Length: 403
Image (tube, rainbow, N blue to C red):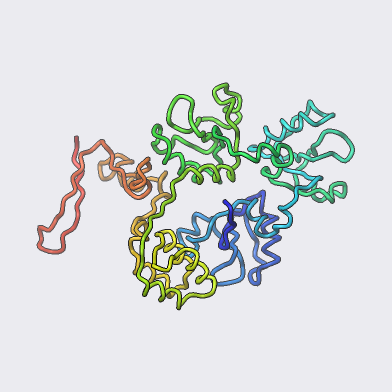
């Protein structure tokens, strides 16, 4: 969390579309007439043109274009730090923020504390919360942020993020990361949250339990599921979670990354190979080598992968060939995109005389199997046979039998 990536991507949403497209129009050198639509992906750079965008979502992009697998997905907060760092160094005195379903309760609690008029009115989704209203003490405007942005009365007001809102209204809260926390699952963060839950929870791990709209918990009060099957408002009102703090996705990443053990191991390469890398390296690559490799060739598998990411297309396969043990995960397939889908169409399964879910992507707590393997239904007995009866190349055969 301490560094901002050089290669990044961010999904275009209704909330960030205008801001992202403004930046693209400033830097793009091609396809500027194209529309940056909701659901598209904005890129730090496109690998073969100057458009800075791709007309599909980040998850789909990674499936069809492996080139972007080393691009890091960023938040809107990080985008602003990267593209306009001066803006992030100060918190504005005059500000506004649009009310969404996710932030509504939190924003309205603050308004109830500071407003001096219209307190009986509801701060509805789609309204805009203000640091101050230009002619009353309501602290809100019954229109969206885009409308407020076009009003002369608020020409010197700056739109802020929820993270900035929290820094402005409760700076002490931002200095520490809570031990007990919760965060609501949305369409945007569900996959990331569920990935953490699958590694940390020990109950209710089957597909479909944790859904969009549910709430991820640092710990459930009575079981090891790490979630609550309702939204954050419901969690907030329960006595079991009165000492729990709602966090942002940014804070979630800081908390969960800090508790994960680094996936690194120390290795040593030959001095000859190190010199070969150094002689072929560019200046930034040499700086990386000097920082992550000792003179005797001692380094880590993570540093080898980092060198691979920095390398040109000619050297990438060489590095991988020289250190296959550092890229062991590359031999596995990623089935995460099909985790909630039927591997075989229902009508095909029925035609075979099998249940619709006789084979599924494994979604469990074992990282060696999670999204890398298939689950075979326990409704049948299964036998894996090496078939070389015809004297040709042996093939593996899977036989289901009735119980």
